Length: 52
Length: 253
Image 1 (tube, rainbow over the protein chains, first blue to last red):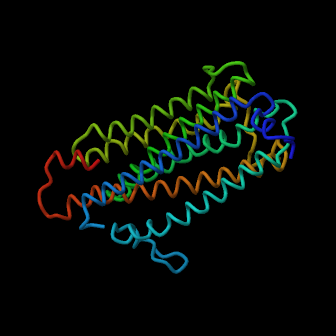
Image 2: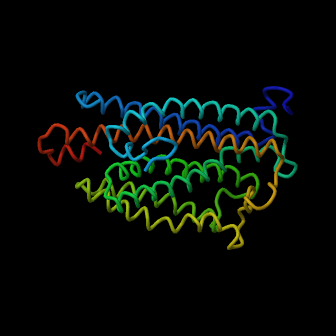
Image 3: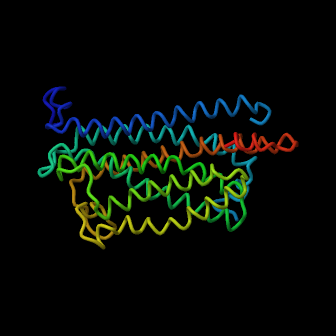
């Protein structure tokens, strides 16, 4: 563990913007994909209730 | 075709595959959350600072798994497409269809996180180097396969056409993988290989591998979930026993 404080952790040795943009975008994309599939499934099931 | 006492061929029928996929999804999702969680913890709190790249190197914990997945998923997609063409199996085409969006997403993420790493370490967001350019082409290939499918109204022709395009495009995957060896690229060579000792600290490698297996489990869960959506959307058109209109077929995708 090399982080003395939360500020230090967020700063990432001056590379915070790059590191957190990378991890943030990845998390957003994955979260969005899961959410989109959830809604797609709900729509598909609602439309064809006799199948599933 | 039985292996480990299970008749696997059974699952090539939609009726058997649909519930199997449904029961696998929660396990894959749980494994993904666990592996990614532990991977992030080791990556941010245990792995030491890189002596050359400082903290910016931590981007590789998401960049490398995303880049590996982008190539791996393309090969898997093409394999299902090829199987579909060879056996004329609808389920295989659907599998290829279900993989494409996730593969495209990981390709985009590999490029974006690569730019985020390139700016502080190379001083440039983007360079037209062999590795970066071939990965960008991979993104266009995913887009091409998906767009070709949606642009053909006849489902069977859409399946076959996009499968052929996916298969032809496989040639790019070894080009991406070996680009750092074949050409002088700005992109660094492989950090992990089968033949040489890894060029990084054990904790860094552990974090990267955990994230990779986590992304793998995530892809499996998401792909199976999309597969189930596609099956409901496509199969239900047939199950009603009436002629589906062009409008319905188009909407089903």
